[in-house]
Length: 287
Ligand code: NAD
Image (cartoon, rainbow, N blue to C red; front, side):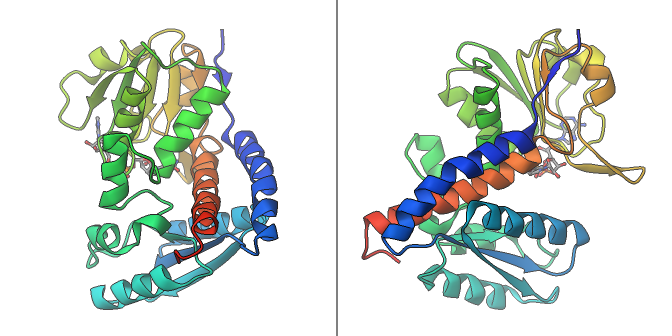
């Protein structure tokens, strides 16, 4: 039987609809949530991601502004821009589009963006808060995945989850979130021996590697929930890490690429920005 396809776009629209009431409440307190997106250089894919986020802000009725910096921007200039945005009262969330040009170290962003405006959940304070189980801002992609699992009614507690990929922004926080929801979690990566032996044991399989079609039908347990985070360009098309055509006949649930995790990631950025504004509104002295 073909898997149930978990559509991210529809779920994202529901998130925006749910945010409208909160945005209206903030308006009564004269607060309009604002997201500042910082783009360095002219990577075409990054430009598309930024454009999609600006559109999503408009859909949720929140303010957005794009700070486009030249590809040759120095580390000092980037830090100065972020430090300025940290103090802007109209900016509640700051998002730096990754990847940065090679001469800029991503940890610069993680160390400079104010934790209370870090709606991408990348700063070490927020990653530490996630590790310790305290409220901060959670990284948007794994948070989007958890939301999709919940919406689809897929239980997590006691299930065996396998996360393929161990990046700081996706794989590791994904494994932490699944662990906090009482899944038993295996993390696989580029040095894992016999990947299929692990993935075949997964009730919930999350692929976040950037390797097109890495997960094939014979690597999937029948009935598993397969979540494809990957975004890869292959023969002029955008595809995931999962061989969708083959895996959909084995899995119980599957997310498409495009139109799966991507739209939910953006929805989580917007949701975190509204949350950041609510925290400011509840504590008027904060900026
Ligand atoms: P990354 O390059 O930082 O990490 C990739 C991970 O995959 C590494 O931990 C590596 O060990 C593992 N890996 C690579 N090859 C492997 C293999 N053959 N077998 C097992 N593991 C392997 O990438 P990332 O930032 O975590 O992103 C992963 C993918 O997700 C990319 O395609 C990226 O574009 C996509 N992504 C999508 C969204 C979204 O919103 N949908 C958000 C972030 C990233």
